[in-house]
Amino acid sequence: MSQKKGLTLEQHRTIGSRLGQISDELNDLYTDIALAYPKSKIRDLGLALDRISLIRSYLDDRLAEEHPELNDKTFVNVYYGDLSGRRP
Image (cartoon, rainbow, N blue to C red; front, side, top):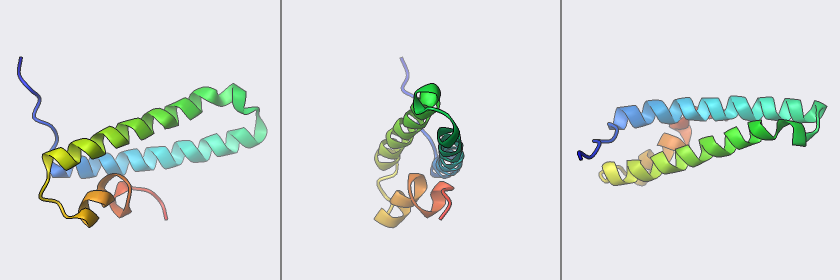
């Protein structure tokens, strides 16, 4: 059974940016919908946000293992900082 090779740094950066954008967009939608309807009725959207957060955390851990040469600032920015696609 062969082990998968993981992602390149550029792939991590692209995915980190996309997941950050998706997370922000879903969070905005969740907020807008929650103002109009009971949160119990949109629970699945909240669960989707939680799942995206788990995926980002997992990939952040893999980034640290696969690319130990990164300095702290570059590392943090991939999934949670300036490069993550998140809006200021």
